[in-house]
Image 1 (cartoon, rainbow, N blue to C red):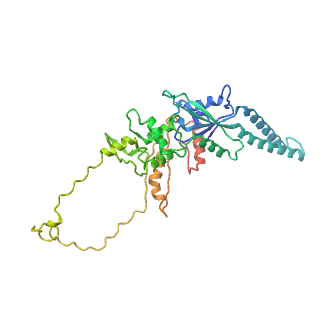
Image 2: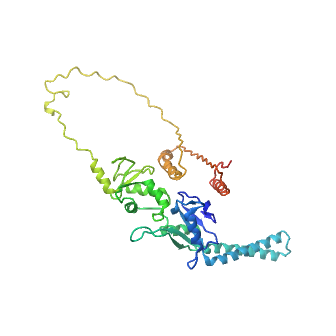
Image 3: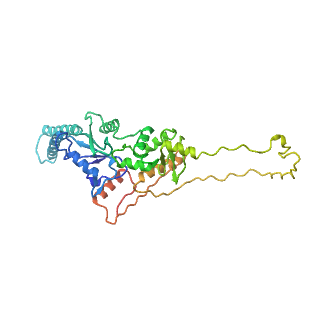
Length: 393
């Protein structure tokens, strides 16, 4: 969540982000709409660079008609605080009744302020891009949804609106993934696509579904892998040959190199590569065989030597410690780290009594130096995430 944050200070990555717009950028359904203008600016660019992950940003905007009331109550609250402070510091003389009156005024203003904040910041705004009937894409549109200011918790109310209106998807059926692949990827002669590329496009393009994270896509692929209706899977392709091909089989997908294959093409490939049937053996029948498996009248030769008797072979000692070092791509680090946890760390954390420790080292360098906004944000976020150490030099 980014509250009153400049566009250049909002990261452009795979993380889903909520940007809270300032009071100067209020949402209105009539006339000029400052919220839409600022949201569009943040969506298009991050400072001097174009924003790539446009489908990872949502906005919370204040209501234009409530901004004036909110500012008024803030002024009243500040005034009561000033009076209360002056009385305590003896800059104003007053009796106990007046001191209590200042405290009560401050408490009432603070309570009213909290209520007005909920009534003011009540528009959840999401960018979208729809397909035209005759093909192509429309311009970016802005969908807005009202929050209930009387809800008990604002965070839960935000989640309710987000998930009920499918602005963000946390559970996805394989048939929906199949339809997306069929519409946007399995066309113009294409019959396969990389799963990692599909996830990257879902983060970038507003006409594709907005998933909570890559785990939703991975879970959907795993659920659809057992069926022959949605897609086939492979982990590589050389010419016309798929490596690690599977179709209609349960699997644990590894997103890094996974291919999603159109089901008709997968069925055709499976049939084409099916092993030829084994021809019956022409070995002599049992009637022609004598004792010991030789043909009648055939000299078997001397019997083989009896095997030497050996004592029990001691088992090799089992390893007791694992360590590994891996370098992550900073752009795809979140996706890669999730795969490392699923495919490596989970092997140990599932064992009773096993102790797993993970240390993360981060190094960042810039020839031009880091700006104040980057330094401040990195230190604050590192402190919030309880880094043992985080500093610049």
